[in-house]
Length: 452
Image (cartoon, rainbow, N blue to C red):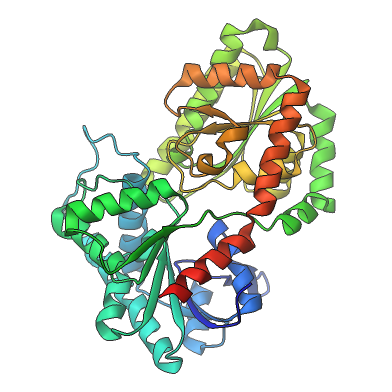
């Protein structure tokens, strides 16, 4: 770990959020999301100011009091809606995960152009708060995160030209940005290129960024483009796997498990490719009669972004597909749509096959978490478009996320695999994840900052 330094972390979500309990008392909750979990390690080793959006009424009260470890930015609710629910999700998310069909959607109507102004407004609020914190601590380095804040670095650079700025993009980067009108895609790239460093999880996403910069703004001469693969805190996660809550969930799974258990753990996001994964399992049972009654899929899905119509529609498609397959093969798929992390970790320990078939994914930590704690030498079936594939392909069964038949055949291969080969593959993934854990990722980020 590098020496202690002053850091300003800027992200949409913060490490804590606030609400009111049943008796009216203030309740503090740990911030959600993998990004927050990964970055919490910085709080222990560095002098961190964390800037995040106030997303609850109580966050806004705390922001007005100035009494939190988080420096809250408090946009007007309508502006936050346009920034978050229209531009960031789904527009930017869908562009960057290749989810727009283009034939009929998206339509960039007047409401979207209004929402783009909201995106600008909220990014400027974040930038203004960064400038205040830099004035309080001029030597601090600023570390922006993700797709919510592509414009903010440009605003900060204009106000404080000598600031040390870096931006980590946690989701895929496509080479083609032509869905966005020219002035918007230029603004995205200009904002990012105001940073000294722009970092991604994989060489693939970094190369795509360089291509889009060349195409849209004529290059990136001033900005260092790099990549570091995010990971997990292996010791913490292995400890969690032995917790009482996980043990209780595991006992329930063991009592009802089939001979072979295929597991997927995901958010109900279209980028996770859940429907095609269900269809692949159905095809496996259609075509390979030996697995009927012996293999079952357990799909543990965390409901995601249900205020956005595309996500609501996707949950309905997941449920329809599950019903269709279970009509052909009764009880073949156990679909559970709920936020139950201990049950997910218990399923990690019990899987014979773990399916990660994302359309695109910046990294995908499920592919690292699951094998690390698995107790059955389970096999990872992994999309070639997941960022984790760049690290783990040697030990996974690779699938194309659009090839449903290919996924069905990969599931058969995984279920049929020789025990020694299963062990070799899981041991390889575990060794890789332990060598390149979240602390190595953080050290890489800080080395980037030191290089400026």
